[in-house]
Image (cartoon, rainbow, N blue to C red; front, side, top):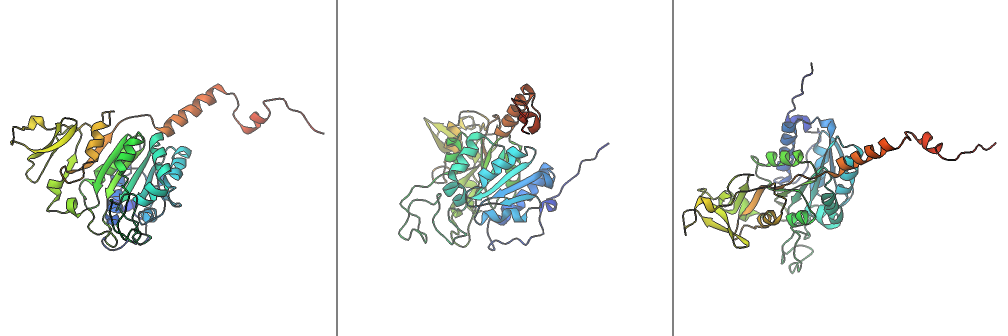
Length: 338
């Protein structure tokens, strides 16, 4: 008989003193990750957390797991190597919008394209926090910062757009303040076979305070956000009386019971459909005319890179009688030098 070990969130906490600015959203993310890992039941020694550079990339120090604090932008590449070398590990990437989408952008899109079984947590505060407040690849056009005193003249990357454009199979989004749903979203990412990307809307209290205040505040959240669940109607609002409907090729927010709109008109979320058209439209809703979509937006099954590589190696080995380096060296014409 064997007994299954029951893990608790504290089993994943390192003894290191957690050092982020007081009020930083990264504290919440760390706690949600500890809880999600406990619920998943994966042993700490079977987990590796990889990071690049930035405030978010301090996270591996606070995990009682394997960890690797790498160099700027290279977390996805290192994580790919870790997963391919040891496919049994649960591999997580802790990264930020600057680390992941600027210098690390190429590594990110190719890890997603290859569908490597890693879980990428993008802590998006739309600013470079560690280097003291420069605009990042996700900062909005016109954003004023230390490196753009007159406002940026660039359009931002949108993580969902990059993920889906790179043929990503899993994309989810959550808020740093959503303690109820974030652990479940992290669990869904871990249970997905292949590359999973979770964008976390994080508040930087020092250099970009209130950047998500229009959607994250208690007074606005119900009307400004839509939490998606597979197989359920896209309903939101303080009174749960608003919904998302199809309006030609676009989406539209309506009040149920007004202008002849009924519950039957409201769309049902299907996270598993291969066609990413609706997933992309949902993920690009920005909280103005349409609410920001949270939860698991896309979750499509596809072959994972690491599993495919391992299967390919076993297939080649089965056809090749060579089993060791010595056998390989002695398999051709050989001669003895005296």
